Image (cartoon, rainbow, N blue to C red; front, top):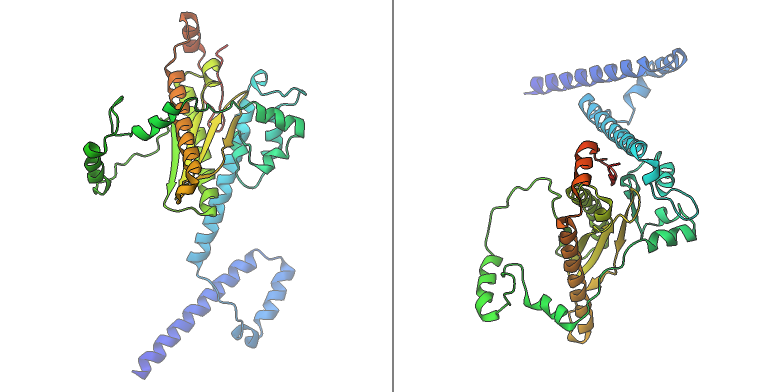
Length: 349
């Protein structure tokens, strides 16, 4: 038993020495002659070699880490390249020129072309709550950008608000909710275990929603960033559906909702001018837990109505027919390619 143990320890020691020698050879390959001489003098001391506290990693671990770092660097280069290519494809006369003559797309490009991390601006999205984006413009320019966003529709009558309470997604159009008739049907499907359908990457919708069971500040930030990117992709898809006709693209507006526990926030994205999209976040609201805060519940219901109204207006814009025969013929002849990282508006001229 003692001989087997000694043999095993001797084998492990030899493997460790081989691994150390191999690592030393790799290090010497990248060293200058003077550095190699300095290293050799250090290695000649057996005490220093045996008492070295640094644990050497295996080559497989080093290779894996280096590969991950390399892939990350390549991805950053690819994204920056796509960003630069999208800017190069933009037509100068289609860009957003402010009243003082400055071009919004060029200001964004100058700032983002060397940024080490990806932001909304790399997708030509201006988040009105983003302090970094605001610092790119002076007060007058930023106010001009903010005022270019259309106001959301407002509830005009009490009946419009009550309609939200009386309708649900599983009822037919015009059919009102009846507690005695529909409650059991709703309850049966609430806890039914169904296999999830594999959807894949789909952006052929009119709105986006992110849901979490409870509210967390970090969740609000992470989901808030993710939902903005998805809304932008959805806007590109809808623009493609209307064949990038300027009149209809400017009317399009994609809505999103963050639903975290009892709190909710409505977002909306549109492209008022040029190739840039504007993302605006409305006030974060909360469903109250006490009856004395019933007004807060009414505010939430009003936001739900606004969201539904915007979706209905967007559907109407997509289904609207504005092209005549000549415009359609020009579209078929001169259709351009879609820019992946920007809302390229085609005017087919």
